[in-house]
Length: 263
Length: 375
Image (cartoon, rainbow over the protein chains, first blue to last red):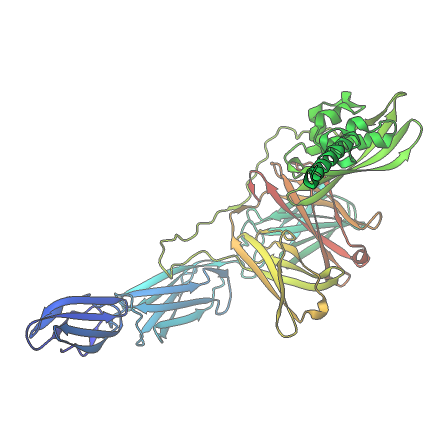
């Protein structure tokens, strides 16, 4: 029995035998088993795709009165046809050093991990239109990279490419903590109406609507608070009006200005 | 007569005798739940009158309780029940009165004041409502005057609500491995402080949602011993505001009963967060927060619902800090009443006596639930 010396995953192959008469050929390997009745003394052809999983295979030829065994290996196809691209995180703040990581796993057409080194091109298209390009060589079937998030909020297109195969993910870059939180107060029918200036992060990006801003008023040891969400970029809340009341504003761990209501 | 027959006859006679004794001279609790106590107890003194009223309320015998009142001409039975159980659906609406307690506050010849405490079993644990009831003698009987508070209806109006709402679309089950999903919200513990209390170790802390999306959060803590051995793991359960909007901070409290701080070498904190559909509405103002030293140590204040729909359950969580700004305690209280739009509802949060003296500042947050949807 003559088996192929080297076989690429999915490639057609033949098994040659000597002698005469009928026999049964068994081929067993990772996730695959073939049984075929053959005529001894000729070559038996197996079509493309018969053995698609990479690994070590055992062939057994059995006939009346005897059997022989042989082994051969099926190797990965050289061409990358599929990428599994993990981009993390899908959402992060602007201006984070090495905050965006991309990991690519290379596969052939039969989903076998391609272990030989291959060059992977990473590209991050930022909301500003500028592009950050890097390359990495795969090791053990994977290539990875870390990139900074930009200063401008918006969606960044993060793609990885090997040859003609590419995969793209969207990374949402969101504003950071408010940088300067400033409010003003005016009295409206017995209550104080507190309004912030448009709230922005330190890169000038508007902090998204829905972000909670806390207004606090302190008067003679009594305290009133209200948590309000940003709407159209500003927070607006109402508190009881007392002369001498100290008013403050905060969002998360960021404190804003303080006002003492004198009227 | 055999011994067996004699024994059977003796048991039968004893059973009959006990049934007769229990019927003629029933114990108080049995009589109350059998609905007979009202007829058996005297109404010759103000305390008994209020005790009868409490028993009727405890049995949810609303008609009998209403009929016993001296001022029932001022309101209907439905008004009386609404006054007791809330005008809008709230915790008390779905609660069961477990027991009642009467404390005489003042008694004179013709009138008296009695404090009626009703202990309700609610879905979040026991709640107590307190009514000070004026009792008068009309010459023949003592009559309880129910302190009816007429609900002020919210005037008909249109309240424009255009706060942000977040909806979440997750990846499908059929998506390939490696396909991207929406990121879980990024949350961070910004303060953590273990303290020893009489009943065990308590972990206090604060959790910040530093993301731009709402988060459903919880915190668990694991106590580790000297040799890194696991002592216990507990979660914050309801001592936290589970819904955190962007940049919102919630306090949390985790109890480990029966554990001594001396046995704890380290604490492992595990905050968890998941994306949740949420709305920035309703906005609740916490007005006039005041720390009262007497009677008892309480943080009092008022909740004002600035939005246009009823908040059925409100949960106040208060964080207390000392002069150096260090977190020293977290307390909470569920409000018995619903929050109608624009209507102030008072609250009281208890502060442990030994901590009250150290409190310099406090911060309160409100978690809300509306039957129209989780908020």
